[in-house]
Amino acid sequence: MTSWVAIAYGALDLRGWHENQTDVELMLLPTMPSEPMGLAGVPAVLWRKLLDGPVPDAGLNDAEQALIREFAAAGIASDDPLHPARILELRVPWMSSPVHEMVYALVASVARDHVVDAISIKGPMLHRQGLRAREHSGDVDVWADPAHLEVLCGALEAWGWNGRTDQWSGLSFNHSVALEPGTWGCEVDVHRHIPGCADDDSAVFAKVMDSSQPTLFAGVRMLTPDLPAHAVIFALHDLRPEARHGKTAVGAEEHAEKLRLGGEQVLQFAGSVKASAVLEPALRLAFPAAHLRVDHEVPLNWKWRESKGWWRAYWMIFRSLPAEERLLFIRRAVWPQAEVLAASDGRAGRSTPSLIGARFRRIAKLFRW
Image: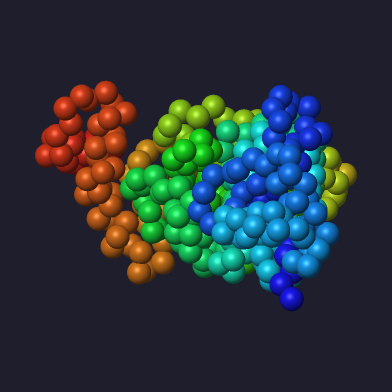
């Protein structure tokens, strides 16, 4: 006998959400590429019934049986009780933007279905953990298993996200891939590593996985760093230098209090991912009585960002790369992709960009560095 359960890539109960000024009761994200949909009235009642399922066909009237098959065709119901996208919990949004919460749920669902480990970092969890006053973030940050980062980015393309033209795509020193949202209006940044950690990318990611716990986003579980780990990640993000771009430096004092919130486990986590060298001034301020032992140097992925000269920065990047990536790096540095040059000309306000002119300007700039 056929029985049915509720499935979705994200589900929110809008009945108790204070900003809901409509008749929509449920916001659901189907399991096939689409945007969130709303349910109200009889369809909403039936879908909520499936949460406690499986619900047998025999327990449904003719109209409900027809409706539930429409649900299945739309990707919000299944006759498989073990469906990986089965929804078991329905809650009101905990983020200020339900659509952003849906994006987290979507990324978590896509990562699960493609067997890619992924961790939600920064964003509203910083506010929830007391590390940041600001609640909302304009984009979604995800730290993915560096060995399968491209798999996750490629899978999200079907949902409307496309990789921004990037001069350094495919090179491991590039710490994240920015995915542009199309109609979703929310960029997804998929991180390969966090600059400031001296250990290799895979080892650091494994340590972050060990220091994470599941958090529910629109009914879908996704790992988020615990407070000590997130305090370190946030400090590394905020303190990261960008000397050539004129970024205002953040002082160690500004993060000492936030690191202190994580307790002395912050020291253990920073040491485990070899971030103590970069964070040493802030850690000493946060834990003056602790015995801080730093057994590693500041990594090149931090040092090149501190350099005000491009040639010096490029040399450090080159040294940090595995041998098989060095030729591609040189080629991209001297002869970037045409779309990269076009985007650069666009940012410079050139209304009629010329590829040949852009190439000459690029080479001239290299000689000036």
